[in-house]
Length: 299
Ligand code: SF4
Ligand code: SF4
Image 1 (cartoon, rainbow, N blue to C red):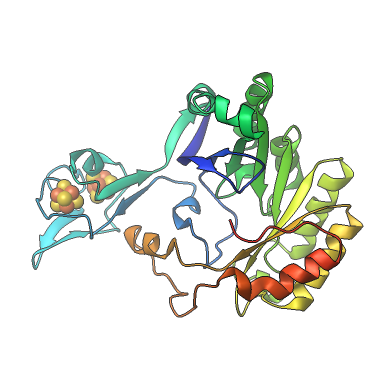
Image 2 (spheres, protein in one colour):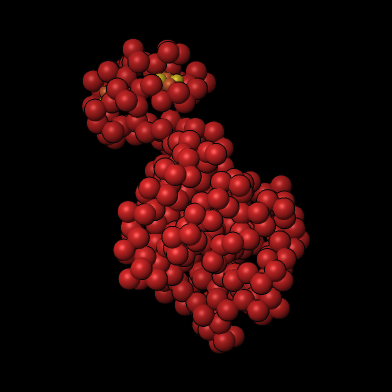
């Protein structure tokens, strides 16, 4: 069994308890314009080209079987219409200017990476978080990875936006120790801009997970002009209380992933939006805490 993974990151303190290793899976049903991992959204492999690292040596040009790379006016140019993300140019570049996002990994290969950090997990009560993209789009792979982690007594969490059929979500999440459930907006008109799922479906999935006895934590990216308001957070608090959820985390908007859009041939549309600091969501944090819920800001 293979899963399509685009990154594995170690030593995270967010996205679950203790020290975590994050396994990022490719493919998402949403296309949020503030996404800090735009390379996660497509389920297919994607070749990224970082012009800032390119020394224009030209080694990659003959490597491309499709003639997608050329030197024009002194600049290395990749024709995205010709590129099939085969990855041949990546190996030819000595300067890490080219990266292939998307690697078919077996459960054994993922577990080899996970087990390298087992001592950290034991000491910190940490573990593995399956993130994305949308982790539940590869339910059988995630489920099997979680089963193998449990055999090693390693804590597991999955991150989801809930915008998947319930059956897929439950297959992925059934044995996970915790589910980090992203809520981005409850305004259907707004949500339609980046999702084909209605918010009612998302909330139904959230309720079903809670009814099934799963430990769920809600996470809200806070985006000015989309959901940075007390009304939204008050609604989320109501949802948390109805479903006996104990924690709502707030993730203030940042632009850390903005440079990635250009490297995969996409435009970043939120360049005019200012990165927020933690103080800017302190009123929302207070609202959550005053409701008797735990709240972590940032991550
Ligand atoms: S990924 Fe493959 S097709 Fe795309 S530019 Fe590189 S060599 Fe050419
Ligand atoms: S091999 Fe790397 S450094 Fe050389 S031209 Fe290609 S992308 Fe640039």
